Image 1 (cartoon, rainbow, N blue to C red):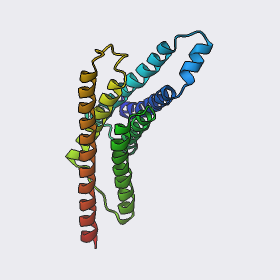
Image 2 (cartoon, rainbow, N blue to C red):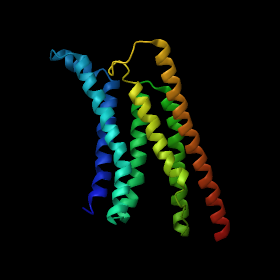
Image 3 (cartoon, helix red, strand yellow):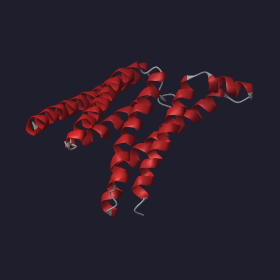
Image 4 (cartoon, rainbow, N blue to C red):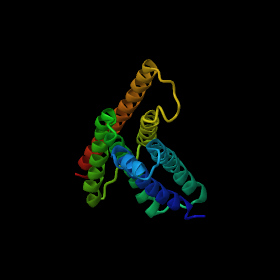
Length: 211
């Protein structure tokens, strides 16, 4: 049982790959050509790929909560888990950002690009501080920003399957839903940037103290 948290983290990495490949395949013409060549309805195949991406993402995002919760509950916190968990989070976010961008979601591409830039910058900052024996404790807001990122990206992915879910063909409703989803992902980007600024200030203070 003590290995379960790390197994869930590994599952998140595996699902991220499946989600990413499903989105990239959807973004290409390959499913249509493959289906037509075999007498299969292209929409059926595309729907299957979309469901693979959506439900794969939902399960992967859920493991982000359960692996940490189980590790604390079972007293199974490990160095490996502490390393893999944030990596799995970042890979999941990056995979969905790139996948949605490939499908033509420019709002996700722009806001997601800002999110990924911050993630890589903070990771580089941690690597710079590590040889000096300095660390950046994870803040409460930084923990919640990952949840906000996943919710915002999940909403974008959900709206990308508007017709698949059988939602009303109402242009006004679709526009309002899209505007709400865009506002949510920009909020996620803003919170992500703010936490990055907090880390940068904390790093500056730590370096001054270490002097």
